[in-house]
Image (cartoon, rainbow, N blue to C red; front, side, top):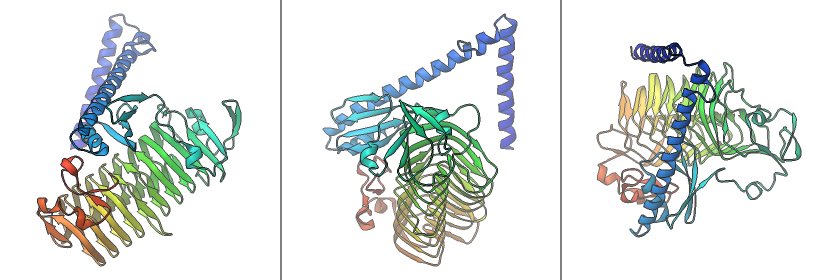
Length: 468
């Protein structure tokens, strides 16, 4: 019923736009004047873009000023900055001493913020010192345009900045984005699997990506066996099995990568960053909606085998699946640590639904959930079902299930739970129940990876991870 209403609204809006255009034509306004390069609609969009930029500039100035004020209120630079940006569309890219890089999610503009209240707009974003970060890479191939991005891994040749480059993969070859790249227009074909070497996003954004692929492995890269870093992807990605914004499957390293678009898979292994991983995913996050059938997660669909590690990641997007669904991973047999979920998680059919993972057969340490968890079957604040180890964590999200296996930490437990807590009233069983005020003071009890949320800046006073 809701879909029908949405369709009616869409049809009504289209009809209105068509009617306006017809009336303008009847009034003697030409199509070029309406839709052309200098047309009414183009100019209106430019005006919108200018207002978005103006808003970002204004907010950045206010954040810088508020951060400076915090210096005299006894706050640290990080605390003051997080407090200043808390209700804005900005997120922190990096903090180095008393200098931070922040980026606006809407305009994608980056700014450098200083402790003394000053700030500057970074026209090309914060550049990565690739020589220091990747000393093993002997040849860097710069990517400025869509056409160049589409050549990655193809073996084609092009002269860029006076140097001829062969767009191949190699253990000593790296690619580096030099601009944000807008992929509006035609659909994007996923890049060949990164077999070795490095793809450095350089804190740039690939925006308006549009991929539709009805076969195995779908993402910016089909697979990753090298290293992908410091990349932001925004848009829409639709596939079948093994679907992720960065890579369909990860067998290498993905770090400091972010998805802010929608990812959909018609079957299994779907995640905001990667569909499947038996490598390393770290310091990455997802804010987009993730939808699939089984083994679906906000960061990765399945974190499995060969010592796979997922750490320092978070999800804020809504995740919906039929079976094995979690805020971080749908299924885990290895290690997930120092991560959290704030998004709503829904398991629609008889399923395993959890705030962090749907099914856990490995280790989950130093993780928390504050998102709403809804499911059928086995439903828990951290995991739907666990035969592994869960320790040093908590849940304050509401848990609702239609079956008999519903718990504040785990729906059904066949493993070990140590030092885990849940908020009174969210659910029952598995873990230790605490009042809101008690939970806000357990940061020392949880261990050395946790700290107090000073002044309720980040998590309404509940414990946060030391990297937040």
